[in-house]
Length: 414
Ligand SMILES: [Fe+2]
Image 1 (cartoon, rainbow, N blue to C red):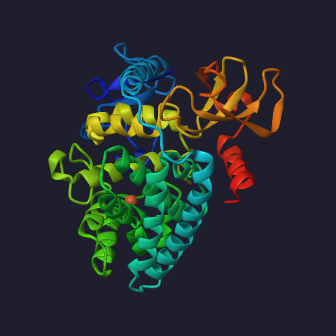
Image 2: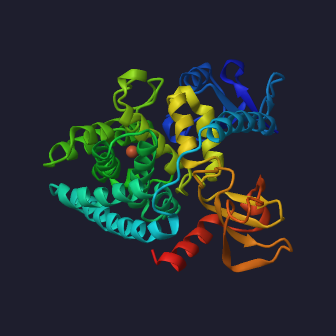
Image 3: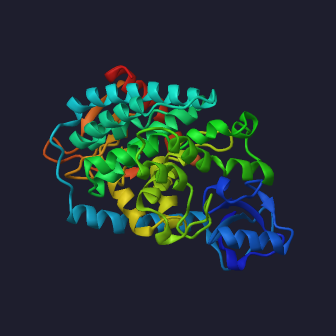
């Protein structure tokens, strides 16, 4: 059985099978291992509040609860906290509706994809990059987010394992812009945040390919090299004319953590600029919802639950709550069952009523597939549509990322 254990209850002989934070940030070589020394326990305590143990492969502990029970408790707490404030304080609707804005969002997205590919190529070739195209791309994305925050946000579901860094850079930029707008920053501030977010990982192009693309298990030495990429990103942006100082702060601070366990400078709490904190949340959310060589993507609502749980340790708890409010308790990509028995995927949040998102209905109440999926705005039709539950996509044989991709390509030709 998988159990959730406080790090204070760890002892030799237990088999660790997961951490309470992204594995790559723990400095451990493996996801799964048997605890053999006190030194390992000390290291786990430094990074985590609790871990998950497999009691079939190692020692048990009586004080722990099953991972399922612990999960339900967290989900309940998160829902209550976020749902209450969202219902009490609904965001105003955007001026431009989703169907109109999605076309402009697509243009901005396609342009940004081209720009980031070229920038990454230039950095790899050792060339000085020009800020002009990146600024234009970020201006267009900012304009789109200001008109309607959900159209661009929906496009962050487009992910590619092969071109991870480019897609990740755009997604982090979009998430930061939406988050920044949600937090009330001005357009000028959003543009500085967006440029830093779009270019935050340019320093990775200075990391040897064999380390960057290694399928997990980095050695301590390789991990130290990897940890230099925010410094390289800041150096690249510092040498580029026309990059705002705040954008450089985003690049160097996007791996800092609230409790000081981040890198490169181990900054703590207030030492981290708020733009650094916003970008670290966006960065982790996109990273853990993407398939990588060393981990399978978490579902969007699972990712939010984990990040809520990491709360104060890795992030500022208040900011995490704001982020969840920004992307919604049913974030785009979430698979849900309606009370009618139909199954669908959330395309975008309805700001006026977060419990009734826009959905692509994939399976009807008789368990037959809709081809193509049927678009449903749950807030329309007298408000009779209700979500029964979030479901595991594997339980109904659908792949949300593939369906979202198909839907976006069919509808807007991305
Ligand atoms: Fe990074």
